Image (tube, rainbow, N blue to C red; front, side):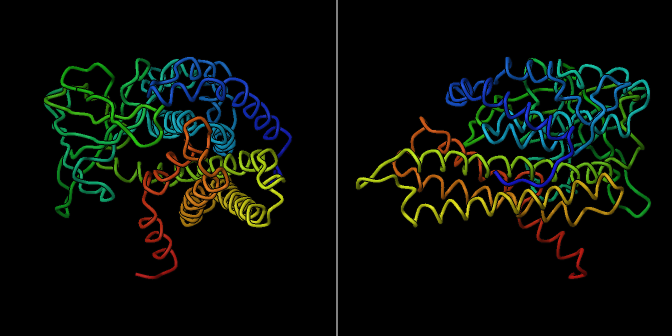
Length: 384
């Protein structure tokens, strides 16, 4: 498999996660997927491996790695299953990282140890039922009443929000009015089990069936005033920044799925026979698989470039959107083509490509739709 050059440490990580995905995830994930059950045993093992602590410093119990290390891990997991990959991605980059970046020492001490170890997972509540791509149209409110915030509203499509090991959901809420008359949006940590915080039944999803996704409700939900995360009124800006980083990791998930389609198609094309020869000997099939590899390889280079810029402290917003846009569309195209390579078997849940097909489309929607990415890219070029 073609891949950009990795350091020795990153290659060791990639190899170990690849082995884990094939030895531990692959044998059992199909049953979880069809039953739409959360794979607790896999997540516990990922915690023991230190995957949830990859981008965090050793003094906090992390692995002392970086955002690129997290991307490598989620890519290798997504080559086998995207539900497991997105569980890690969301908990590390959107659940724990905002607390690491913006939290007080007390907030870090309270929440990070279990999130970094993988004993618990975290969630990030931005999207609302009437908002969608318009994240600034937040309607959830938080009113300061003495030493507590009183929260009312709803969030939708929130990953990791309702498992038995979910410790918190950090949400954005309107906490007042800015001097210019706009909404003052802040971020607030809401622990699981807080009275007034309800988790609806899990969604019945087309894909990502082994991941956890719910709508959340808040009715006079009271949390301590010290659960404000970061500066009051900066919550929206904070999480836009986190989403820029998250788009790189999501691009890595998409690359993993795209590469998984190549892996499966190569194997099948060399085994399946028709008209007295393997189907891979037919140029129509071999060229299709070659195009799939081109997409996966190019998408990988795009997210590697965005991650390198992020870690170097350089502007990366445009590159993150390019990586997320290209990789997600490459994943959809590869899933379509892999299904075609497999023919009727590609439409059966007995084969991974059926799962890949169901998982791919959402990558063009979550953490900013393809249309939003094109808008970001156009604006970065000066096109208004």
